[in-house]
Length: 210
Image (tube, rainbow, N blue to C red; front, side, top):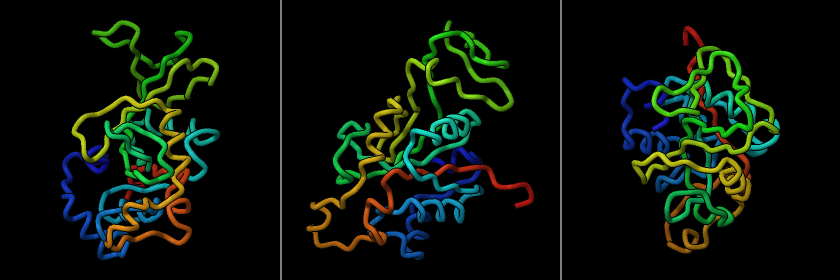
């Protein structure tokens, strides 16, 4: 799904992705418990530069993520998936990946910066214009949502930024159900905590000439 956002004309099937991940010993059953491996796989299969982000989605990473999404670039985030595909907190027992493709900000004032334009059909909804977007100060942001999609659903959902951050920041344990199902899984050194907790992958267009 992220590859389609990077280059819609390029088609890489799920079977090709899983085969490549197995060839590199990144996965056994289709699982991916290492954000570093996910970044490597993305760079090998798609025309992109993958940047591994650590330390969670808040703090200094928050404005970086908002600028990245405002530029139309996808973000890959591991999280615990609830029954409705939304983020929950299960200590990593329901760990999955989501593709985040955009943001929706509710601001306390109309100071949106130069270049923003109001939607032709929805009053009060503004779109960023061309050029770099400077995220508004935190005190100006009343609500912050992410446009996200999980592989088992065709629907794009609106998730609270804080909720996804909380889910991403508590990925610590390998699922006991998976541990006892008799199958082999690829888990990095340090376990789920080292591989996924507080991690995300920013996907950038490739450098010119690459």
